[in-house]
Image 1 (spheres, rainbow, N blue to C red):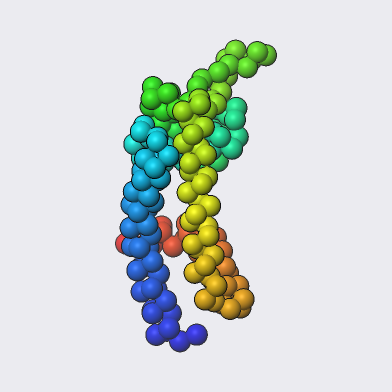
Image 2: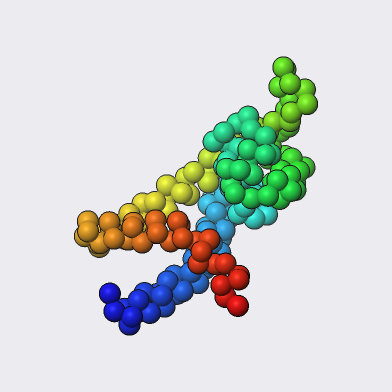
Length: 165
């Protein structure tokens, strides 16, 4: 592959990264609109909180440590988010009968509505995504898949601060 083609791909990658930031903003806006259309007036303040609700809904009962591991976030961040979600009534804290020391989280009815709404939104996003992929051939999709897999595997190498000095 020529250096020029690699540089063009890098430029497209940077552009995609910037678009991804915009997509997250659009996702928050779309989620808010979807919630309003379903009569839900109270939603978490940010998308990470919605994803914590999603993680709890997919794994309940679950503790903060397991959420942190599954979401690749710090235990301190999850603790802060879960405390806020608890105060806002999206989740409940429970203790197991056989282990009073360990605290587990489950969704409240209010949290279940957010969980279900988030799943609906992702289904809509998946349909849109797949429709875009219809413009690509199978080999182009395979090449894209390989690109993303390599990027995921090499992400730590790519973003080392020491190598940027």
